[in-house]
Structure formats: structure tokens, C-alpha cells
Image 1: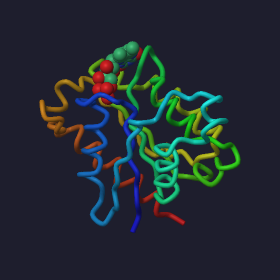
Image 2: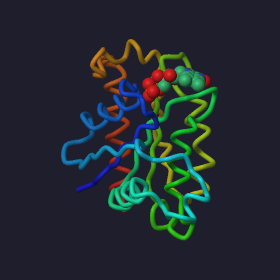
Image 3: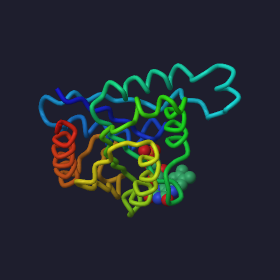
Image 4: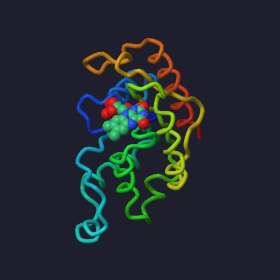
Length: 184
Ligand SMILES: Cc1cc2nc3c(=O)[nH]c(=O)nc-3n(C[C@H](O)[C@H](O)[C@H](O)COP(=O)(O)O)c2cc1C
């Protein structure tokens, strides 16, 4: 069974990106093991804290979930035309210690999606992740693109993806990504 770990880069209860990850789990091909990880409880990176106490438990736990998953799906908000600090902070922690990067991220299939109430669909944020994913040695997937603009209309008040066109695109995206992840 192909397993995907979806992580949204927002701490907000009503996060559109968290809703997008949940929608991705709904439309993933039958037989896909889809799990949802969280960046909540990850502190702001501080080298002194790391030296004194090591990598926090929440980070270690998420690292092991990434290791266990065949593929990683990142749903990124866009802040000021780039990636959000909280999400980058989480990935920075996940990259500690450096000797563990290859085990956690090396050759890991990764796809990026994102949702915003704005018109740009998180294009800039998704692009901003590319050097990070490259630096970590991941295997980013570029087979399809998914930019959810006007998220206030695409999702209902309960965070359900109600835009049928976006749902179809997400479904095609997930089918192709899972196929990529499953390929030897
Ligand atoms: C500091 C800040 C900067 C933002 N900058 C952008 C931006 O550059 N482009 C954009 O589309 N949305 C921008 N937004 C709006 C976010 O897309 C919106 O808050 C979105 O709901 C965040 O994702 P979430 O719903 O998953 O929390 C910004 C929001 C904040 C708080």
C-alpha cells in the first residue's frame, strides 16, 4: 500500500490548507494510506534550545512519520508573496540534526499544493519551497499543479471542499502523485 503523509503549513483552526489536506485524503485513490501530520506544538527554532535539550519530541515524532510515509504532500499558505514562517520553521526543525536529513528527506517524493482566499492560488509560496526541497535532497513531483484561489468560495463553513472543479483537479493530482510515489 502506498502511504502519503499530508501536512498543512498553518496553525489556524479554520485553515484552508488544512481543509485542502483533508480533501486530498478524501479523493486519494482507493487503497492509498493517507495520514495527516501537524506542525502544531513545534517551537520556534532556537539553536540554544537544541543544544541543551535536543530535538523536541513533536519534531522527532513528525520526522518518524515522514520516514514511514512513501510520499509527502505539503499544503502551503502564502504570506507576503512567499512561504509562511511557521511552516518553514517546522521544516527547519525537521532538518535537524543534519546527519538525519538523508534518512528523513533523501529521495522522498514530495508534492506541493496550496490554498488562499486571494487570486494567486499560492503560486509564489509554492515556488518559494523549491530551493528548500532541493536543498533537502527530496524528489519533488512536478507532474501537475494545484493552485486554489478564492478559497472562501471553494470551501464551505465547515471546511469542506465544495468547488467541484477544484475537487476534480485535486482528485487527478492525487491519482498522478500516488502513481509517481508508487513507481519503483
Ligand atoms: C502575514 C500575511 C501575509 C499574507 N500574504 C498573502 C500573500 O502574499 N498572498 C496570498 O494569496 N495570501 C496572503 N495572505 C492571506 C492568506 O492566504 C490567508 O490568511 C490564508 O487563509 C492562510 O492560509 P490558511 O487558511 O491555511 O491559514 C496573507 C496572510 C497573512 C496573515
